[in-house]
Image 1 (cartoon, rainbow, N blue to C red):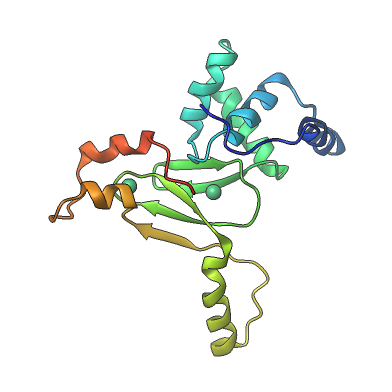
Image 2 (cartoon, rainbow, N blue to C red; image 1 turned 90 degrees about the horizontal axis):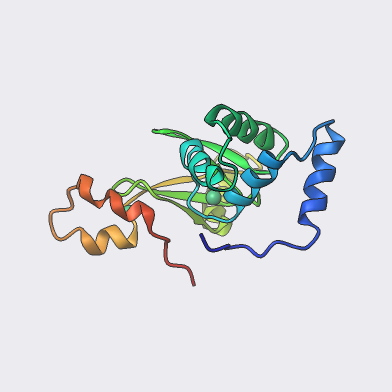
Length: 169
Ligand SMILES: [Zn+2]
Ligand SMILES: [Zn+2]
């Protein structure tokens, strides 16, 4: 897996400090779990994280991976998001929204500015000042639209697209 976000040299030290402040240690499973989740933009499930972590730490159990994913999420070092198939984990902890493809199941990051119009509309109609927001978009991704033909019917075989990286510019 190719790293997507270049990590600052002191990212490990910052992570260690964050955990230490809560009386937690940066154990080897935690360090590898963070590496794995931060290296992908696929918003992996616990089961996928487990498979990737096991390559580097063969003796690790799914229970250990799952427990540590929850610990790291609770400390804000990664975020967890519910999905129809269970929890998904995101190494990108900056504010951003998501687009879920209903055909391939892939979750894509959406720039936060996509929600700006919604904030303004809410403010003008209700007077609410929005301090934060999470918007979930659902639809068909560009790749599935290209492969979808004219029927537009989701096909289970297209789930293989979930293994591919989205286009990034
Ligand atoms: Zn798709
Ligand atoms: Zn994300």
